[in-house]
Image 1 (cartoon, helix red, strand yellow):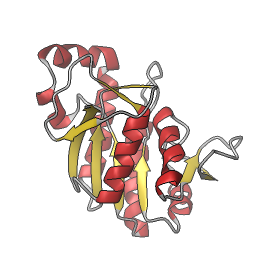
Image 2 (cartoon, helix red, strand yellow):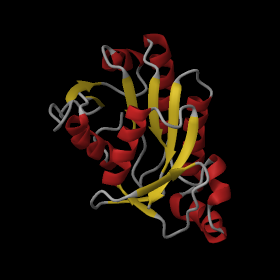
Image 3 (cartoon, one colour):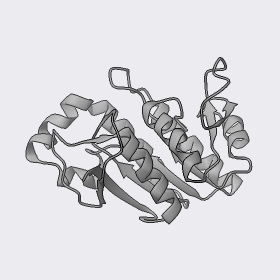
Length: 202
C-alpha cells in the first residue's frame, strides 16, 4: 500500500533482497510495472480492489499518505479503514503501518519546541488524519505495528533507534531507506506486535 510514494518505493526495492515477494496496489492504470513488485490496480478504499491485492499474501506494509504540500484529504484514514476491514475479511493478520511522530504517545517524547512547531510545519489536519488512520488500526483485531518516523529524507540506510518513548525534535530525521529496512525488520521479527513505536536515526 502506497507503493509509488518515496517510502513505498524504498520498501519494494529492498523487500526482494530480504526474501519477500511484493504485490503493489496502484491506483494509476498507466503504471503497469514497478521494480521489485507485481502490480495490481485499484483504489486503496475499494473493497474489491483490496480483496484482489490481498489474495495469496501473508502480510501488509502500509505506506499510505500524501506528500507534503498536498491537501491531506482522507485517503490515509479511509484507505487504512478499508484495508483493516479487507484484511479481517481475508484472514491476513500481519500489518505494519507507517504513521508519523506528533501523533499519540509520541507527542510526550517530542521536545518542547517540536510540540509547538511540528503541527505548524506538518499541518494540524495532516496530523489529525494520521490519528484517524492509527485509530482504525488500533481498534482492529489484527496483528499490527504502527511506526512513527520524524522528517523523512532521501539518503542511504543508517543505524536507527526504535522504541516506544524515543525522543525527537525538529531536527530529527530518518532516511527512507532506513525506514524501509525497519519496516521489513518489524515484519519479519514480529517485534512490537500491537504496539506503536517511534523510529529515528540512531
